[in-house]
Length: 114
Image 1 (cartoon, rainbow, N blue to C red):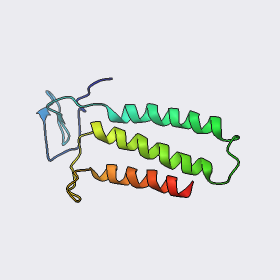
Image 2 (image 1 turned 45 degrees about the vertical axis):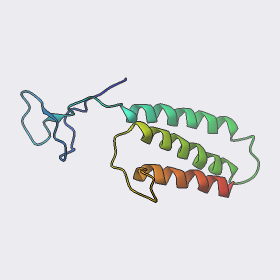
Image 3 (image 1 turned 120 degrees about the vertical axis):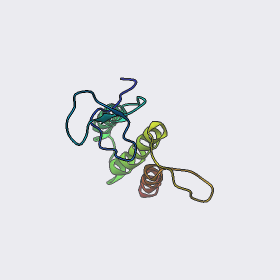
Image 4 (image 1 turned 90 degrees about the vertical axis):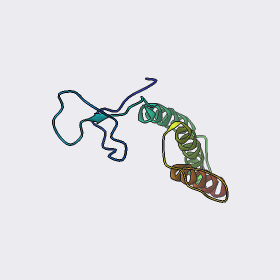
């Protein structure tokens, strides 16, 4: 679970290596293996679920659980995006990805809401 070449990927901008014997439109895999971030994200979201499930009866103020979800999910998304290969934006000299901007907004929304 450290690297995956994503066979039959749909990324046409970087076709990668052809898969031998494959016929059809999506017959390529990445040139270099990448982190399998969907797997990592599934594991982290399951842990987030367990955390929220364990806190659901302890938090008495309405909306606190949702605010906690926004903050932890924002953190999880931000750190996943650090190892994912995405196009970067240029915002005031910073080079975040679109998902990093959204995850930062999620975190601060939860912080303000909570």
